[in-house]
Length: 210
Image (tube, rainbow, N blue to C red; front, side, top):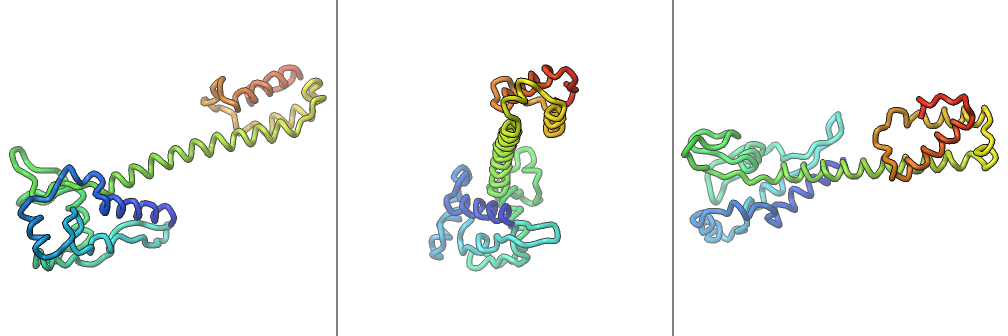
């Protein structure tokens, strides 16, 4: 739910602040019509019906962010009512005349309504942030785990490994098996090298477990 709400807020933020929408300004004719009716002159904002329709809904799988299942009332700019989900698709991907679709205009055919992406950039931003958060969390967990394991062994066990100590290390470091990202300069990697040296001193450790 929190993730969907974060995306919803970012989509609305992009619309209100016109992030990325300056590249596809409204036509002068349409802009004058909006102003004549006293409507908001910004792109994708006239009566704010569209923005208010962007919601988060709970589903059996969690939550989804999208638009309400209602029609967009075109008044006063248009007399045509359009399903809000269809309007969202047109605004995001653009439309051509006479055929409407995501494929873009045919050769030499201009856009009827140019694409003004605001959903895809918000989703892409979240995906990047999620990847960065996952990486930081993984590194923090690895450092915490290795640090905790180091704290369980006293100095005597490091200098004179006992069978029980070796079993302790093998058991608790099994999660690191097969890891490829333990670079030498990584703090966790330096701890791992200490463990390797410790096991080799015992002479009976299974190096493949590290």
